[in-house]
Length: 252
Image (tube, rainbow, N blue to C red; front, side):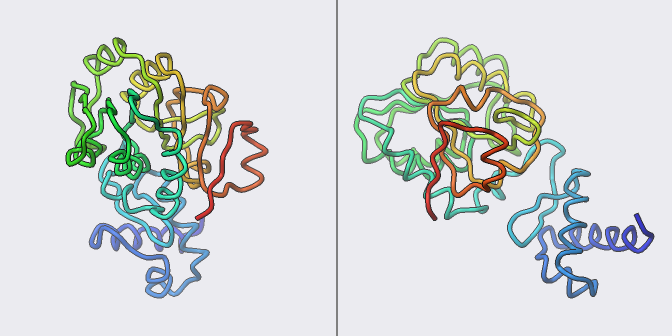
């Protein structure tokens, strides 16, 4: 890597530390380089764990483990809404449902007011707030509270889900590059997800297409384990690479 690249990336780090969130076009103008060059720099800094990239911008990474929920909720909202609307057709009255701490699933949670006698089990504090004004029964998993993901984790949560059988589970992922199934960036989430997958009749993966080209370390299932995978339009090369027979793409 050239000294110019080193200096430019150091300046980008300083700018993001000051501003928390920056746009690619603004960085390109400030540093007098092309947006393509800035995107390459941001990819490098993302791999180092310094920032998170979203469409057209980047944000300071506040944790070495996972993206703040506030940021995840704001990303790819149109895709997440379309995915949730498609997933809602699978929800029937009288179901016991598991929701992982997924930002996509929050939009699906808002639709549950249209179903009767629903029981929701979740470790997501955001999902609890989403459902609080509705009629669904809510079972909150205990354990340690993680502020970054606004969720609970640990042995207590695993023991709770071990005693429940779910009609349907809506799972998410942080990435899957290099894997043959969804993975998380935090090791503490995996035991809960693995246990839920073993105790669920219908397993659904909800993920916007950006996660299919992201890396995560802790795989909790295979794509073939899911009854359906719902995403927005996925690149044809990724579809071939992952060979997902149970894929449903929705239009935005």
